[in-house]
Image (tube, rainbow, N blue to C red; front, side, top):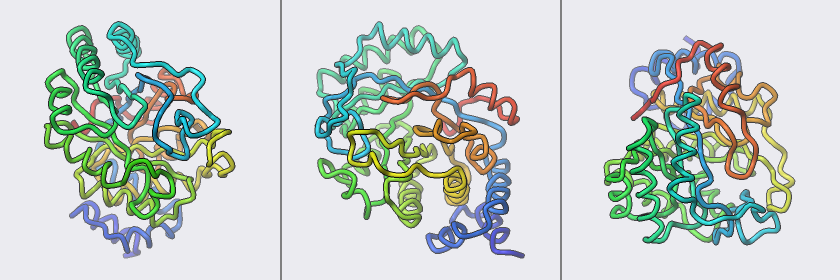
Length: 324
């Protein structure tokens, strides 16, 4: 039995592929690797496809210095549409519009290190309104909050918290210096203690190695994360990473396939930068990915929900909530 097949059987049996084994898989022939990743996905996840959308609930003027981000106040590429926290009415209307398009999960994302206490209260009001007047699930990405605040958010009706690790613990300080990797981990642990599911992945193409990418997913696995956003760096003029070369489709497929081996039952979610791929991610969805963020991203254009639903249907998937 070849190495890929041996690792596939191990992933299906124990879900415990090691770092060393993942590095070997990362060098394996791509088509064989992708085919095996798809077999794992079908066995562990079936044909469910978790499609979500995000809303820029608070934009720009961010105190953090993440080198990829147009919302950081540290760089020239400052968000031209900066605004404070959207009102309950605005967030509710966005939820209604997304539900009408067939979206099942709606994520409110805010800029800054964390929401202030008064802002948490304000957004909890919006979450309560969304849950009372729609059937859509609410995910939140409000920065480095504490367990007490996450409990308020859960009581308001949110079901999931998003906080990307972004990369490995080794590489993270090269991307951000205004908060730490441990801050990220503590946030995810606090959300889980509050009874919320968690979503955490990162950005590929910032200058990290394959080892960094694998270490990031291994950390997510240790934390019990089952929703893994895979962002492809969209180099934005005015940010320190503006001259980075975007990943190729082949590189993205290889990463997605290896991630499927590492967390066999996860929702591996193509996110920001998917539009840079000529096929809108179709080959990645044939290489182990089974989820996506649809619609516009925070400061860049995305792919419409209608286009994604058609793509998902043509690939034989069924849009549904996964890993609740």
